[in-house]
Image (cartoon, one colour):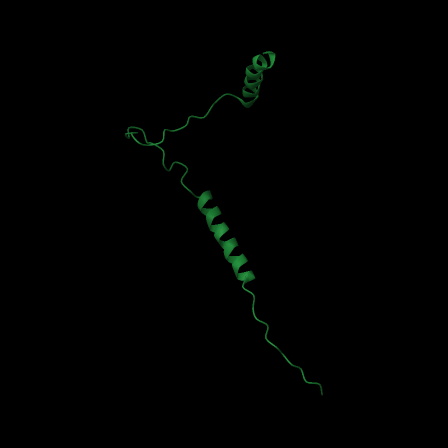
Length: 79
């Protein structure tokens, strides 16, 4: 009968490192998904000294915003 020799190969850390990196990315992604969207905004009646002011969303429709950009650029091209 032939002898079967079994040699243990050293285990690689690469799968563990990849797994930990993926786990960290998942945790970061979940915290961004479930983060409070109102965090850091100034509430009504709260003093706003030293705080970032809340940005207001432009309510102009997208198609009109594009036309406004074209009209602004037209005089610049003529000059």
